Image (cartoon, rainbow, N blue to C red; front, side, top):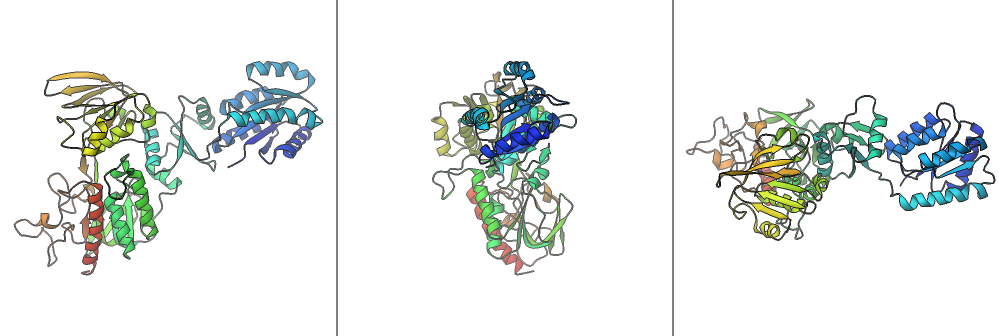
Length: 553
């Protein structure tokens, strides 16, 4: 861990060198001694230290400096480092200024020049101040810091991406943290834009989009090859399983994921019915393990990169990425899963990402500690989300359309919900509208069976109301059912006839679409059991069928 900083400031080089020499002799083992020859130089150094996330333990500042006095410097510096100890170097004539500073700036001490011998007049004072600083100031966080506001959709996007990528970060709410607000203001060249991300190397990102952020943290990298045996679109459980089996069986394999590996399953706070994990596992953890395994076996994961189009040229499949580059392959597996179904009620749009969230939004749950939150939905994902939120919120209200949870939720989850005191379930209930300007204040609940409505004050809404297939990419390429799910295998045979345009002298394989060599696995397929284990199994089976297909090309 980097050493805390002791900053000494004096416009006279002889005095500055003398104090720095004495500080180095005593404290260089535990502290980094930084010198500045003017107030402005020192202030710039303080801002840079804050941007880098370094700890500032002590300011030793000369009072009489041209352009900016010592007290003026301290007044600005402590907005960024309010816990730093403050010592003023003074001449006899500056005593009044020092005493005033004790009262107005909480000055810790003032030292008269000269301070010789330091063993008697300098070190005892600084030893006490530094001991006190170490005892009362927590260790400085050395990772990524995100400054923003709770009710900011852009801040939510950044936090959600980092959380689901399992990249640690520290959240700094500029509306509650004066030091964070001062840091943002000190770095702004014009109008303030949020969120601002501060990295340990001193660099920053201001209001980045997901591809920019992914590139900065090392998750987005260009493809290493122009041609692959197998390209997988989507890195949910089905796509990651296909990547593991494809790479392990010698296929040049690439996975393209527009967001974060894990898909819908990756947003689950706890999966308790997946084989081999008796204590349960979070969706993000499962995705991380699978992605690591796929990479170790040789698969390329192209994260935060979207396939914008797909076309077929003879027996080759060509995908175009969002940066305009193209990748070709012999075989392709569609594992694009499903996307959340949106809530279409008055008042929802302005609040998305600002107290209204699709899915569990694990990055935001702690912000609603001791608050009332509402969960809409009655399937397993909603139950898992409610259990996770119940660890923070004072009350979790579940709204479900049906009479009970029995028809749509696993028994183990129902038992957990019934045993959790701060979760209540309201049956036959739907959301009719939301009220709030910058954040949710209350929602209107309609009970169709009773033909009545009520308003419920609430601080946040988490929506789990089903999903729609992520098949937009291939809607003009392969055959879909009426709901937009991809038809495969025997579902393509109507009256014993093969699909239109089928040119091979065989029927489509089990997971093969209406285009030879394009397969589908997981939730994007028509009429499948939507469970993590089922998706993983389909991903593995798809690779075995890819091998059979490759034997014919």
